[in-house]
Amino acid sequence: MRGSDLFFSRRQQIIIALLVSDKSLVGLIVLFKRKKDNDPDKAPAKNVAVSNKLTKDQGLSSEFILGAIEDGVVMVGPDNIIHLFNPAAGQITGWPASDAVGLEFHSVLPLVDEHGTAIAPALHAFARALAGGKGVRDSKSLLQTRSGKLVPISLIVSPMAGSDNHAPSGVVGVFRDITTEKQEEARRSEFVSTASHEMRTPIAAIEGYLSLALNPKVAQVDPHAKSYLEKAHAATQHLGELFQDLLTSSKAEDGRIASYPTAVEVGEIVAQAAELGRFNAQKKGLQLKYQVSSNKEVAGGKVIRPLFYAFIDPNRLREVLQNLIDNAIKYTPEGSITVALTGDNSVIQIQVQDTGTGIPEEDISHLFQKFYRVDSSLTRTIGGTGLGLYISRKIVEMYNGHIWVESTLGKGSTFFINLPRLSAEQALSMQKNQANVVSPLEQH
Ligand code: ADP
Image (cartoon, rainbow, N blue to C red; front, side, top):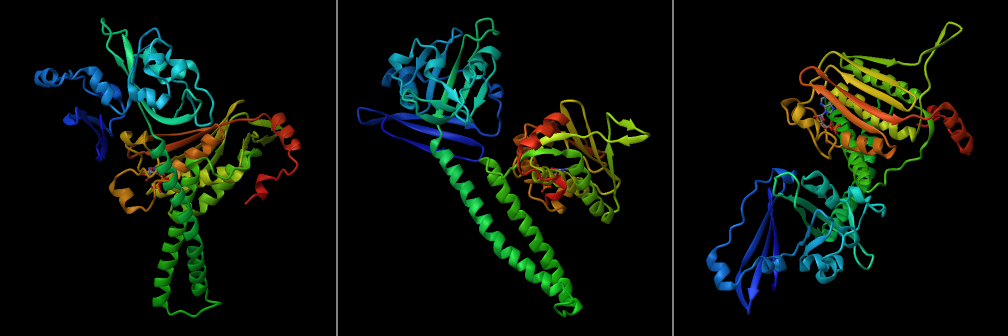
């Protein structure tokens, strides 16, 4: 093979490899990869067809084809032993095929996560495909080459049908080095981050001057001009929020969200967020209720609400709650919003429930992805970026929590957040150990 080109289309990724033999072009190998369908199991099983002419005239064998493909191709048997290793696999891993074949895949293709921690043997994509008999994709892990270098890869492992159609007779893994793609992604993220950071300053200045112009103590403006200025002020505020969201989401991508966790009482933060939300809800004619439940203790006839401690940054949790409550208000034309706090010994659960539009079932699994918005006539008229829930998920996951939604179209939605709960003793000892503990009420 002398050369190859990569072509990308929106729906398919196409890879073309030129086959050159004795200085003349023998043919092309074209690999199509569907981009939308993430489930390799859904790919229709088609027989490979090679024309007799090509096989006879050019001596085209599967070995020749495997040698021409730029992706690493590795076949592993049910015994975990490598039976096939193409030249590209050798180039990416640093293992010559002659050394790799006959060895266990764990020793030739060790994977680590983004923090450099080795992936447990049972969680390795090859092991999962062998055990589950289903296709497995992994584009987060890094491959440790023979020389110890870490290479980001995109790996797809597909089972080969066994004779009884149940037990796979082995699996085939196809992988490629995605260092360049990752670098481009990092550059893009860096650009978004710098641009949004830089643009926030002039926007803050414009917003400030518009506020001054609208302040009757500072400036006299005729009523006509005032209504224009009010619109400009609202749009500038929206633009400022948009840049803030873009900045936070690019930080969330590479784990740069500022976080100063301490042992804090979540009840106070949720109550404050509900109080702030109530004002906005009432402006829209919606009722906002706040409920704390479970473990109510009665001391001297007084109900004491349970204290829910968690190890979190209160400011980050405030952002998440504000986003959920703002969304509940935004997507609820009429009815009410209920913010609830409950939990048991190990988990704190926050719920934000609304009687709004609800979310179509097919959108639910995508909702916490970046820029995802439900495509409905309502969302088209309501402004938004589709970044809020993505940022919320990143923040909740930062504290080992979990966020999800249950919804019925036309009836309403409930967003849930589960956070690991600290016992009062744990929280107290953590607070004692922290020299500069600040009450969450004082942190704004
Ligand atoms: P944004 O609201 O800026 O579009 P989010 O990430 O906060 O972005 O929300 C993503 C999408 O999820 C929204 O566009 C909306 O379609 C849907 N959504 C979020 N919260 C609710 C809710 N409470 N009720 C109905 N749909 C919602």
